[in-house]
Image (cartoon, rainbow, N blue to C red):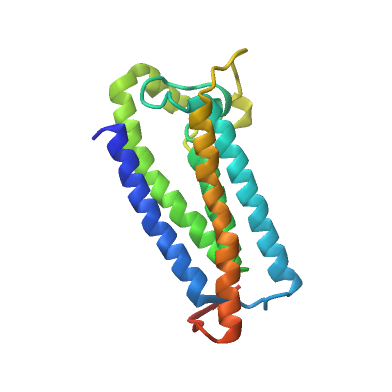
Length: 202
């Protein structure tokens, strides 16, 4: 399986995960009513996580955009974590879930994203071992898969940036912000009694 094929599978699985998240938004209410201070605080924490996701994915793409599959990028954010793009996406997924006002939904969305990216990463790693051999095996042994280790940080003095690809990554990451109006829309519909509430979660 090629990198492109793995990325296609990732997009399909991620689309299914997003559909599950939207379903959770639609049928789940929180024990904290709309307008309650805890409800609003959870939503704002979610927005903060989404902003971190957007900035983190864009920062990571400065280093790898246009290079993935061809070069082994091990500097900058890739010196502390093998998959910073996915790490920030997991943060963003949790932030999306928190737009429901529920900590549980936020945790579920983060867990789903973690599972999806774990499956994709294990396939990518096998492909990259075939491409880069011992160099990639050494990288695997030293750098954590998802959770960054700041103590490993190192960088180059110069960086060549492929601006169109970075901008594309930034634009893609903005999709995480769609969870805000979607969650607010479902919340308004539940308040009006238009859609049922099947689950009430903290």
